[in-house]
Structures are given as structure tokens and as C-alpha cells.
Length: 187
Image (tube, rainbow, N blue to C red):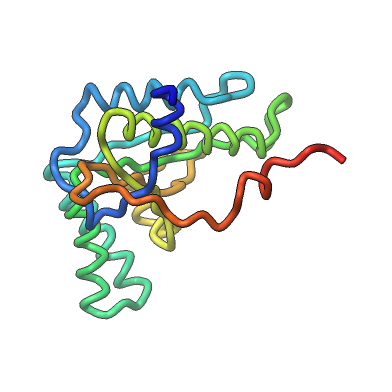
């Protein structure tokens, strides 16, 4: 099989508790961002941005996650678990979207497609470079303090990509659908 196709067909998400050091370095992150910039993007709007969190910055992210958990009414163990999620991952990449709903040429749904395509290319490049990861979102993306920490005016936080080296072998997730369920001829 072609190595590119093999890479595409072998990528699977791996959660933070199964990620270890090392995470991607600056050169790997630059390649991942470059791959994201090759995603389909009508009119070249680049409606996305990435922010890298690693090293000591994870403490600040953990504090934000803990505050969001506290505000959501979680108990002490839930707060500690959310904080730990920020600390256990070698590299976390926040994903922001900049959608212009009034763009005269590119409707919002196409801009969202570009964000999703960029995210997929970013994760695929991480896999091709030997890293594992997973996209996460949830209630924290809507927390005002977390949004303020990451978003510039006009942006919204989509979620986080957790990245590192797989601490266990990647396992294929069971498929709920078959190719015939998603690829059909026009009748």
C-alpha cells in the first residue's frame, strides 16, 4: 500500500492518559501547521488559528480547567481530574475559529469546513511524524475565562488537541459505519 494512504488509514485518536513525552517540538509543530494550511480553504481566508501550550504553561491551563470545573459544580475529585488533564499531556494545542458570517463570497458553512479540514490535516501530520493525539472539547470551551485566555476578538474556541508519544499501541476503533454507508452513487 502507498505509504501516504497507509498513514491516512492508520491514524486513530489516543487520549491524554495514554500520551507521554516527548511531545512534538517546534519543528514538528511547524510542519503540522503547514499541513493545516494545505487544507481546502475557499478564498484563502484561513479561518483558524492554533495556540501551543506546553512545559510550565500547563500549570496555567490546569488552573483554568480547575476553575471551569468548579464553576460547573464539580466536586473536589472532578476539579482535580480536570486539572490533571491539562498536566498529563505533553503538548496541548488550542484550536480557534474565525468565522465571518457575512463574507460576500464564502458562506459560514464553507469556513467551518476549512477549520475542520485544517484540524484533520494537523492531526494527520502529527501521526505521520510519529505522534499520537486526540481532539477534545466540552463545556470548558464555553467558559468565559478560558475563552478570554485564548481567543482574540472575533474568534471562538473550538477545542484542544492533546499531543504526545503513544504510551500504548494504537488500536483501531470499531467502525460503526461501512464505506457503503457514506459513499453512494447519485440516484
